Length: 152
Figure (cartoon, helix red, strand yellow):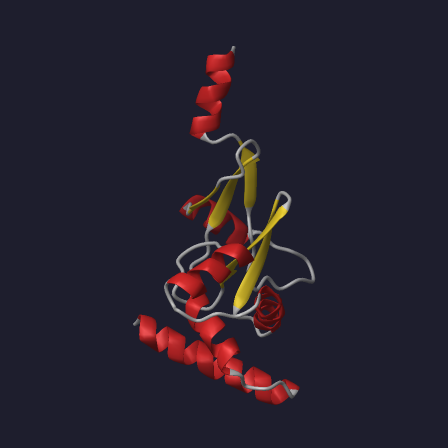
């Protein structure tokens, strides 16, 4: 199943590159493959380290940033702004989920809630068709809350 997804996103990227007059470089395909090997969120530094250590494929951070922008434009990657940091995740065949962000330590947790999904799906937005959405809930994680209680 995972290989089918990787083949599909490679095809989507190829079509996007051809349509927009971009070069088909091995670096772009290696970055795409690595991103679709990562579960969950990542930042550029994590992607850089993952590629160097696990994939044994080195690219510059500039190449990573430029390729991620290209992959966002192609609809293959989503950018999240969690507080002061940018994180990314694959978008193709990614289940709708919600995010909890700790305002103290910055930890991001994903969760799914069928009641929330249903409420959003049933919300009528006049003159607007929803293709996808993101939900961010900010607060304190259990560890930071425990630390806060101990200080009191």
